[in-house]
Image (cartoon, rainbow, N blue to C red):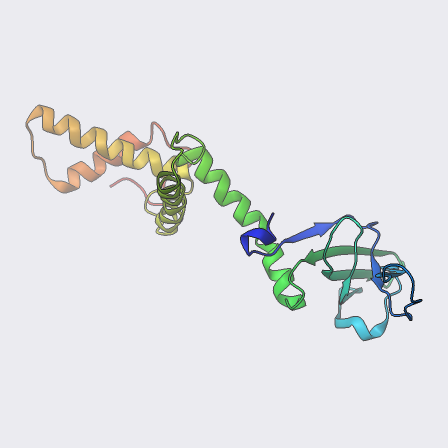
Length: 220
């Protein structure tokens, strides 16, 4: 389904997943050609597949990249195997990352996979705060607009948080602007037009009622 959308899959496998090297033997001349070769041993990979090796705090990290088969996938996979060895104890552990893009470099694949959690946080914020799971549209253009508006608000709120003016979380941000709206509406009902500094101070005080984290700067 991902490939039908002209996208590529990047994910993580179980450490004990059964991976097979491509078959390199001769064709027997009968039946379908074999595609599954020798089963890959993630703890004994040929050095020709080694892409990077480093040692940090007595932990040796070796990164291997190769194209292999998995019996649950129709197409060949681009697999990255990160093997870590404790030089003091001899203990070995490994992680298997993969992509359907056979041309993707090992460094980019690892970098893209590390973005997984940030992507999940973005969708969580879009659903929890910006209406991604609340809109009831069913037409393509309306769904496109609603979904993109939710993600735009995620980006805008993250940029606003970086200023440090509104607080440290989405709840702080929403409390600030809700307080600003309440203060503005109340002053209009009272028919008053006070000094802007007074309005800002009042907004800060009102926003404290819905704020989770205190402001980094004190109230004047």
